[in-house]
Length: 455
Image (cartoon, rainbow, N blue to C red; front, side, top):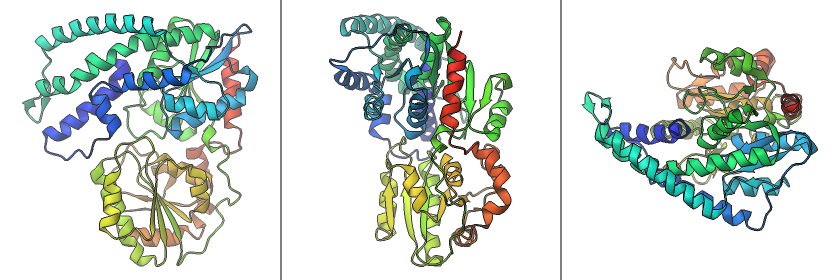
């Protein structure tokens, strides 16, 4: 159970650590607050139960088939699974979720999602029993807590206080969630199951349940690795990655090479626009797209300030800021735009599809984001904003992107890459980082799942 919630626990403890050492940790989104209170699972289950009312949980009477479970309602998690599901067609044994937002998205795609739920009376009994057991274990641990030193001070009391609600209110939900997954795998006669994360709670439970039932598990890379947390260690039987660069990162961080398969990124199957890196003249009236990543508030503030300051050297340019769709409260960005009186030439978006934005942009600006790869796949030049030469975790370093941390540098780099010269000399490096761009990645992943599911 602890491993199934390790990402949530890490996020809580990281925030605590920042506060304890006097570093501003930024605003807390409503969802983050619900997680800290241990209430997010109850709310999601209630929403899912409303959507599932009156729907039958379809069984399966034919050959054993591949199935898909999608947990988190962000494009990086949902879109690969959705595209692979469509590529499987009649060979898809079922697709399921624990989140009402994913459920609605799958419905819009015509995929007839199943809800990972137990009958209400059974769920209540399992929650009651699990809560009692977890409470006893928690009290025993809290009576003799581990020492947690931070900057020379034992912060175990603060740490236990911050984790208490997650443990006592949220962790009991793992028991009915795991049982609902087990029944889904049985009901669909699954021979293979694909997930878009095996580090977040439901994906990890899926892999555990699959292994116990002799079902092969396949992990689809959901984003560009920027840190170990949320990505490692890989516990699924197979890992499907986008590119040779991604494969190298996972191997360098301890993943068995024999479980890794380079099949491409289904999200990039329609990335190509026909532009193919053709030049656009630099000058006035340029359209810039800044894609922010889930970094700290302080870092994102500096990135935006640098980009805003560069505009005086790019007269007439317009800026679209794309906020990360799965991250916390971004109100500080909106406040920054108002403070700089930039509302007239800045547009802020968060949940809109990325492809139309890439088609419209002359240059994309990033700090560290999968959007850089998606931009290159679409033939849109990229400038990376960074403030240090030392960045060993970056997946972008091999691309030799223009890198700058000053307004003057941004303006100069934008003018240079907008001419299209970047693509002429770096197509091999782009292919190694982005992966296949033949429109067939979803089909390859679907074929791989069928092969894994075959007797």
